[in-house]
Image (tube, rainbow, N blue to C red; front, side, top):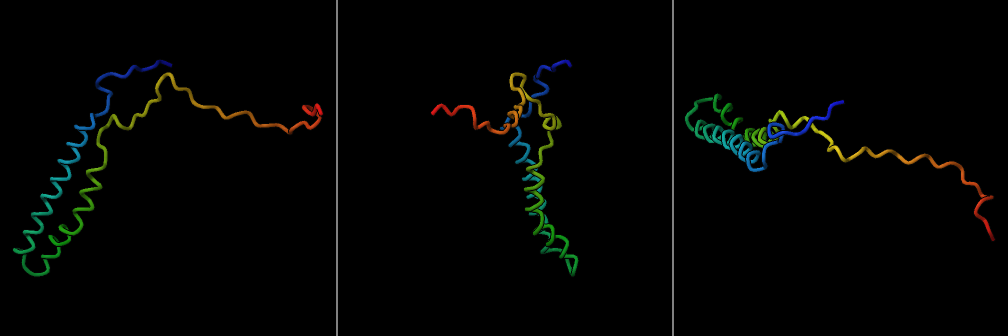
Length: 103
């Protein structure tokens, strides 16, 4: 099996870039919420329930959407080459009482 060396294109986003992307998503959702709050004043009748629902439920969805990673490279988790998987210890057999008693 051929071992693939990591390259600059396979590295994940830096924490600053990832934080920036999440902040942009959150700010867009919160801007839509502000529009919903302002629309409550101008929308007549029972139609006011639509922007009111947007103003109430958008904060939850904004947090959920902002915390979802959209980096396609994030799904490929690779084990470093020098770390080997741990094998479980062999099962212990019955203890022999006749050995080791030198009293």
